View 1: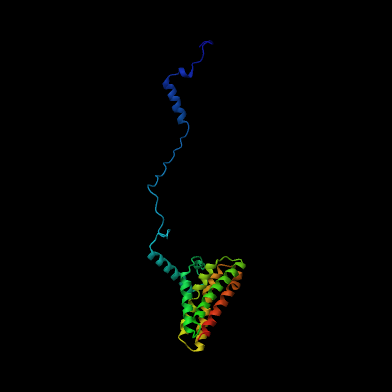
View 2: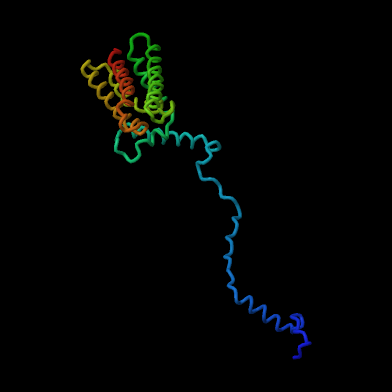
Length: 228
């Protein structure tokens, strides 16, 4: 080739040569394989059963509330501070159970009272409400976490042993028997409330948190014994 001749242009190369060079260039680089995307769902799955309680039948709502009352009452009837989750009933609080137990206690006390039946019935409600307020303030002052309705639910469920004691004392047994029954019911109610309160405060302050609850149950116990 003479010095005056220019090198051949890439465009002047044959077409087959250009395609071979492109294929070699592509094969020299790895090609990433993108996995296929999962297929889109054809429809949105419905929410789990029980997620929307506004549209459920009334019968289902009543059954669910009765199961909750039975489960919470079981924790009171068989108190165990060493259970796996002692604060479960405090989180799953409700007011149907406490409402029934305080109504029952008020009726037992009013029927046992010879005079001023309505005042005795009102005193039972006032003592439970005052106890819930004092328990809430006391736990908050001790650095714990509780709300008023949780306190009301806790105290109301733990009144169940006192309801049994008031029913027995309504049968007018001897005074010694009434004292024994009221003392057993008082101890049972206080021991049932202990696991729930212990989860709401610091372990070193359990006794201080339980003190006003014990005073309220002692007052109810004296009321059961005094009314004849």
